[in-house]
Image (cartoon, rainbow, N blue to C red):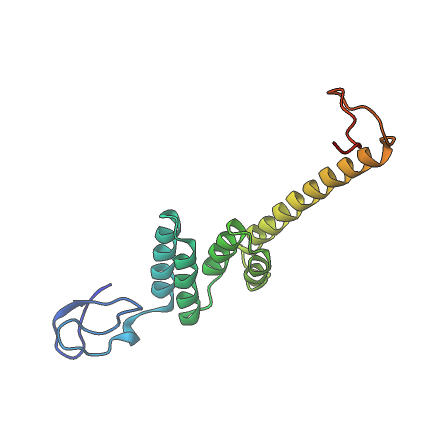
Length: 151
């Protein structure tokens, strides 16, 4: 964010992770709004995730959440945890989104899609197990070999 330093009067660029004037070192953290901080960390995490560095993106999101609790950051974290197979963390981030927030429904969709995949996987395993249970011992398989005998 480009601003004028309150101490030296010179133009300077500050960010939530570098809130000091580049000229005089004055602390300009008070000029960084929570919305700017959230946008900054969200954009940085999104870029890191698009480059394939999900762990670094999650670290950036944690930094952002330390600055300001944000539904946007929680949803992005939930998506990244889901992609990494870390479903408990995904659930925790979705749960951190307030119920009245518009993003809550997207987080809940993420949870439902994960649950649907799990249910489909359980059904496939159960169908396979049921088929095995109904196959008589010693039955010849389609390829003509006895699948129950050891070689």
